[in-house]
Amino acid sequence: MIVGIGIDIVDLEEFRARISDALVQEIFLPDEIAYAASRARPRESYAARFAAKEAAMKALGAGLAQGVAWRDIEVVRGADGALSLRLAGRALDLARGKGVTGSWVSITHSSATAAAVVVLEA
Image 1 (cartoon, rainbow, N blue to C red):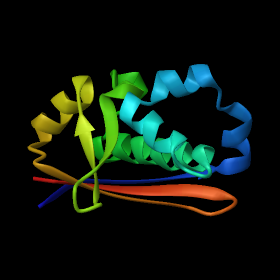
Image 2 (image 1 turned 180 degrees about the vertical axis):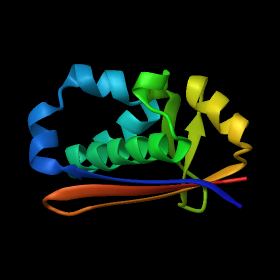
Image 3 (image 1 turned 30 degrees about the vertical axis):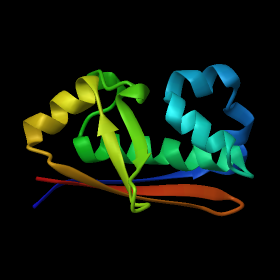
């Protein structure tokens, strides 16, 4: 059963202008940073993962104002290549409260935008 769905889109021009090393450290976890650094266009990879974190907050029905931290949500790639979320802190508490047992994540980017959809299931 679906217990939450969220979507987000990021303007890459604006994102590129705002992203800095300090912001990367604030928002992303080490494995996310390593993945983006390994890509030909790391800023686009960061933007897509940022969109996934925003979409996850929407699916949870809570965000920064409710105590969810950026680093409470990690985009992970399974052995099969499928993306999902690894939650911690307040995000994990909220997910447990909703009975979340799994997540589905789809991300994409073009030259102008990055987007993500997150579905939470119980």
